[in-house]
View 1 (tube, rainbow, N blue to C red):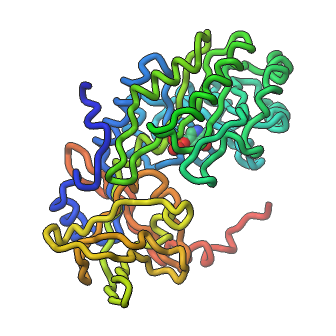
View 2 (view 1 turned 90 degrees about the horizontal axis):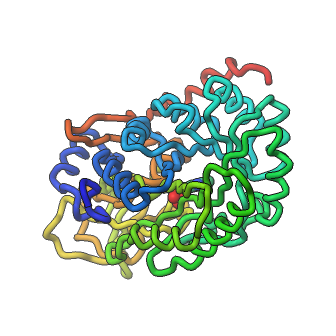
Length: 415
Ligand SMILES: *Cc1c(COP(=O)(O)O)cnc(C)c1O
């Protein structure tokens, strides 16, 4: 392997002293994103799938520095909203490297995307309902169209991220060939697509194989397709003892299940590109000894990193300030008055004291993106690292930022 780096970057692989100095300089909570690791992840994907078209699912992390890094590393952009299309264009993705996937798209998104398509006619639009095709046609769209199939199989680490079999997503796969015939005259039909959800893992590729097999059959049933996109969902090891995904094995399984097609294989991972490129740093506010455990209150919460509250997600946690302290069993909790505002229960952490800085691993994907201002809590800043050092990519939000929408409410235009 050339410069794709190791298969995984664990929390313990980060430079502890450097992270502590960043927390000291920029305060906490703080997202830190290493663009060098984003680059490595892109390279490994391209090396494992040299024949495939590889896009990055922008929604995992939409920061401009990340998008530019991904663009330079040769991946295209898969966007889930008009806002993401705008961000990808701003980051310099040309129209022919940009796809918009419409999931129950609001009218404003379609208006905006069709407007951008007029200036970037090489853009591809993926639709998951016949109704969306009609709505695009109503707006004058006759460009590159991809049909999203519901393959009837899903995969995911949690039911909330399993999309492949859910009726919300895609056109039932057996109806796709007839719809393809119907739309052929009015659009430039270029591809078929499916996304099974998140969580392709090394131990069980059977759901992935089944999805890809069905998509291969579908691609062979439709003439003249440019690509067959089998989605994202490439898993990352959130637990320290989980092995990293064997990308070569996933690639082999994908090729074998797809079989011979004239259409080019396409994949669109999001999480895999950014998850282990990011950590969240958070300071300890409160240490409370209770009979059963030690409750460690930190200044990040579910408003900073939602995944544990929303998906029961596991994230590694390390006390950067006490590398040599003995570990004690803890509950690591945020400052929000919600039972779900807990990062970990029954977790061994080097005995924390007030003021210590904890690092939460694998925070690069769906971390900042899902942050909110619940509790009127401003969102944290993000620092990006690259060969030339560290810089602030997003400043800390202020209470003034949050309340500005009220203070400027009279500027609301009538609909
Ligand atoms: C979210 C999403 C992805 C990326 O999923 P990951 O699990 O982050 O790889 C890819 N394609 C579509 C259509 C998605 O909605």
